[in-house]
Length: 149
Image (cartoon, rainbow, N blue to C red; front, side, top):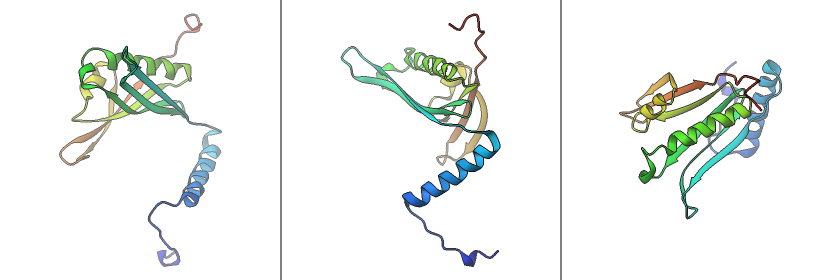
């Protein structure tokens, strides 16, 4: 079929977006059954209540995805990031996820994630130019029934 029979439009179109989202979800449900994504947010606050770090993302299809993680510069290297990630992994287990997925950039904190046991699973070079986007995962072992209460 020739592409000359179609019109292409670039730009925000909430109705068209809903059609595409609905169509893809319907196809996915046919393949794997019903699924739902659930958002999460986790923040660290200092004694005055100011946000000094946090992360957010979502879970679905058996994985928890960390979309953003940020720490105030004064908090970096003091263990707060590891504590946040430990809580994320616990939340992933509570949600029945088999692992945690995230990406970071070569100029951000790849060594931090490697120390926490995150495994490389892909690299996108020159994203942004001169750097890399690194895709990482951490499978989470199932918690034994006798220890889960």
